[in-house]
Amino acid sequence: MQSLTAEIQSFSRTRLRKQCTRVTSLSGRRIIETWKGSTITVVEDPVAPEKILGYVPDTSWDLQVGIVKPYLLLGSQDAAHDFGTLKKHKVSHILNVAFGVENAFPDLFIYKTVSILDHPDADMLLHIRDCCDFIQQARSEKGVVLVHCNAGVSRAPAVVIGYLMSCEGQTFDAALSLVKSARGASSPNPGFLEQLRSYKTPTINGSKH
Image (tube, rainbow, N blue to C red; front, side, top):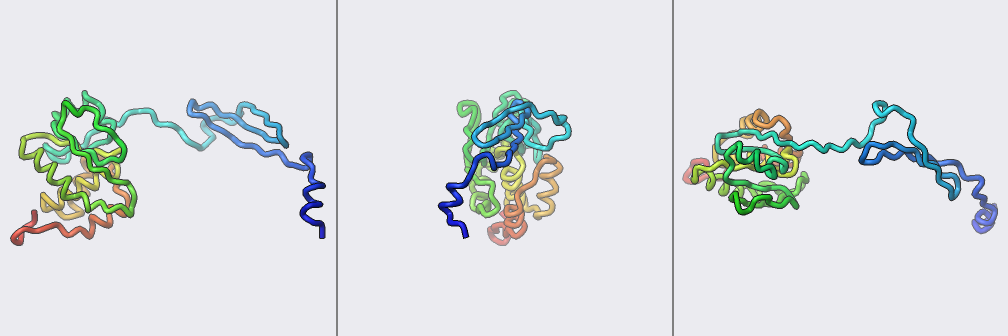
């Protein structure tokens, strides 16, 4: 059997096969990188763009705001960062449940930040009481609160569902249906849904709070 040292000594770069990598840049340019030994050749990819599956950057803003209740709105960070959208919906309070998203207009709106990770194992229910108190505060002040996360798909809808169950006495199915009808993109991750489905809302003197 040939030793490893002998194999290394007898190795020749000319025996290497060509390796091709297709690359799509953020601008949409598609190229093919071909390696042969230590030499690289770059050419334009001749394949028609519509025949290629890959990453397509989405640069459009999501300003769609779901009206869950007259005082309770649901949206993405884009809506929360667009002053025109906030004024259009008469927003006075903003509940930011994203992670790493700054509040855009701290001098113009009343904010509360509750950073929640969009992960199935994250304990979303741990934050429900805090979020509910802020929404109730906005309601008592005759304000309108926008609840947002990054995309307005998982965390914010989950928090609103939790609020409807905890403070409005709705069932999980009814709350989920209302949130989805207000914002069709709503889709809390499976872990959040399971937590909410088994959520036992707090009671005070035998009545839901």
